[in-house]
Length: 79
Image (cartoon, rainbow, N blue to C red; front, side):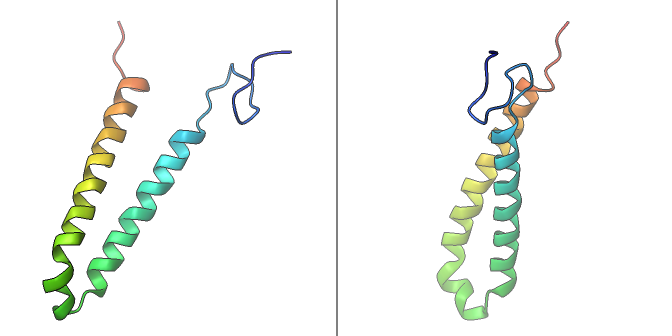
């Protein structure tokens, strides 16, 4: 019996579950952020802008970290 990943796939194939989940989450959060900004009324903008900016800051950090990790794991230049 060969080694298996947590999802039951053979270990010889990469388990891309985490990568897929991260991509789905980033896409969902981008859509939520865009919808939230589009739905803001002039009154909301005064009260909610700081919270939305904070959310975007966290989102941006996660997106940058995700792409750095992809670059290192999948697209690194190896001689």
